[in-house]
Length: 201
Image 1 (cartoon, rainbow, N blue to C red):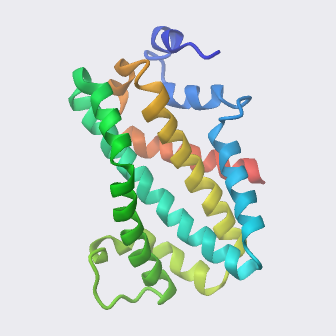
Image 2: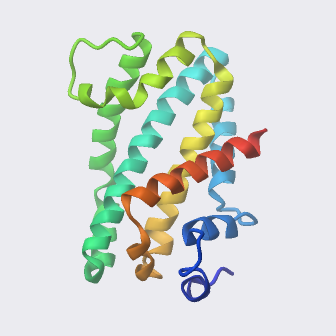
């Protein structure tokens, strides 16, 4: 069993991220985010009829996972500003899942259209953020299935990890939220993506 107390006592003053340590501590668990991502891919492979469908599903689901992760990051910042209200804020976030997913689905579709159209958009509500998915245009035009499978695993590893922190880590050890900022969120996401990519090699 991972000890949140031990994390606070032994890791906070070192030069590596306690968030990485918590993630790594889950490796033998059925709830390990990378394992959940692999399971999600296997389910997707069973649901799609051919490589083209699989590629499209990986592309769409990767965009959706990335957008979802951005909402988790915003929730972390809200928790950091309001630690005394952490549990009510987390509960409210959970209660608004359906509403949030509708918004994410709309943004996801607009980004998907942009990628499918070769990086061209006639105008939509997500235009200012299309640069976030520009790097997907060329792999899509080349129908690079391996690229999108790797992207799917990486994005879902990130999503499942941030979800775990929101609902399992911070309610038990809200003090850790003080260590979270925009810079180390980015670094943490990079670590998670690299972990997934290297684990697939």
